[in-house]
Length: 175
Image 1 (cartoon, helix red, strand yellow):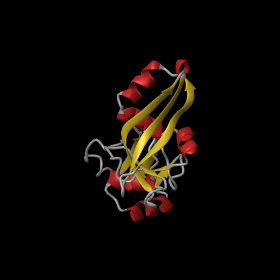
Image 2 (cartoon, helix red, strand yellow; image 1 turned 90 degrees about the vertical axis):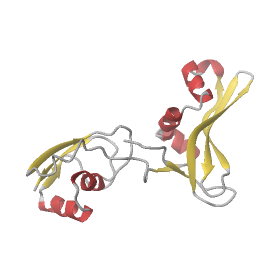
Image 3 (spheres, helix red, strand yellow; image 1 turned 45 degrees about the horizontal axis):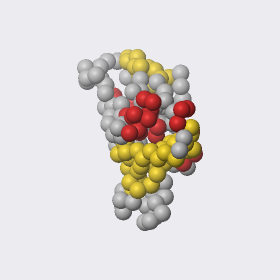
Image 4 (tube, one colour; image 1 turned 180 degrees about the vertical axis):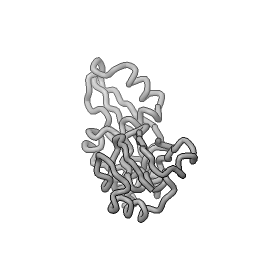
């Protein structure tokens, strides 16, 4: 589950840094019947503000009132939703770095001593995580040990465990 907003990866025009942090602040500008809205992000090095386009020359009547209210209230939940939107990321040419922005909730440690574990993983948000890392942290193993269990066939799943996943999956671990 997420613990904070991810770092936005984009080049700063002032200091050439490539990391920005979003704090959930929005700017909304009205020009007659047209709206522009931006999510504001701050450079982690120089503090310069960059704007990520959310709405561009959109008719006021086509914007849901609750969305507009959330932008006026600087809702951090809305910022999190918008940062996960692939259309917004593509339009603004940004990527996200989720390092340190999520935590693993295993529901306790009483399951670690079982010989066979059937585990179902659910994501509270679409956070791209390497399953090997997730399994290692959740089961108290080293990542190399998890890789070895996969090659030996003692860790099996219906999905490919290499690469990154952001959807729920299940796996079986035989010790």
